[in-house]
Length: 302
Length: 214
Image (cartoon, rainbow over all chains, first blue to last red; front, side, top):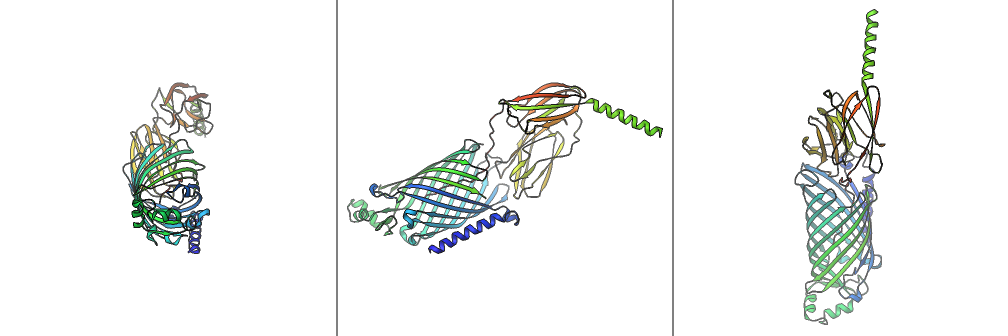
């Protein structure tokens, strides 16, 4: 599977490069193809999503993502967007967390009126295959989102997004059913600098992890009957994701999400972005899993 | 032979009169920091006679590389302006300006449309697909106008006489006007200092990363 994942990434890279290079000489359809690549290095605190603080693991992650897409105006107010997206995530310290995601994305956008201040409603759908190093996490993800966006001034825009995600993994431990609501805003401070932020609430399944000694205590009643009853009713398995004997388990949770990003436009096509992201997970029985990450990305549109 | 000579003499006299009757204005436009201002429009509105009807070729505002080219265009009222789509993508050109409201929806690559701009005033053009695309078309009541270059200089030639000079720029809050007399056969130089507002154009959509959470 590891070699299959590498092959898929290589194929996506070659296809993207070939399409980008052929843009000038190719037919009109290909002329309008937009190929975007992004590289991100992040530092994630509590990447293990562990509730017991002394056993939490922090790690650096590296992500390379590619997207080849095309816009098509269907009518004066309707815009169709189709793309194929690929993303490879590596976690050198915990390589069982490495995975490749690949799949098509289709979006339909409706603009209500003329001009840059007219509100825009956008429906996005995606189907992604996750080829994870950890076989239990491999599977298909279906995603749909509805976003209402509006520009208030030439330099300030905001949006409200509702999203639904369903991940059907090989193992029930990694099955996810989530929905979220997010509000976001972007302020273009200067021609180069922009500041953006988002805040949201996600509800649904979350995969958390625990070192074996902690987990053993939880499922033998060491942390009380509430923890015992809930954790033994949910799917779990030994995955060794963050060390020998580590357990991954699935819980229902509410997650408070927020992020803040500063972006610098190096050129019309290249942007560097520094982003802080926080996810505060509280599961159904009140156990907390705070996760923070700092990431530096470079995004280039070919 | 005699009549031909007489005709040549008359033509020469007329040409000399026309040349003598024309005057030139050289305007230098700078901002308050002394930096040259590009794309400022200098127009000469005659005060003692009516301006002749438009005779210049049609104006052109193209869509290319998902931008309007040029950014600022100036034409006399009554002039036709051509809008060729030289891009590889569709555009939806529109204007909501009082001087001319119009829409060219689903405007395909290679397509060319033209419109006549009868009313004077500012026409702000946009593309409803690419929000950052913007251009200004200034419709003036005179054939004597010029646009400043990168050095902030514009040269307009007009018949000698009294004029109102009007200066306009996309970032100027109100048009600047002053009266001037242009003597025949002379070049008159004028310097203008403009207080410009910050450039509030929509930034062209740069690629950005969006994060998800699983």
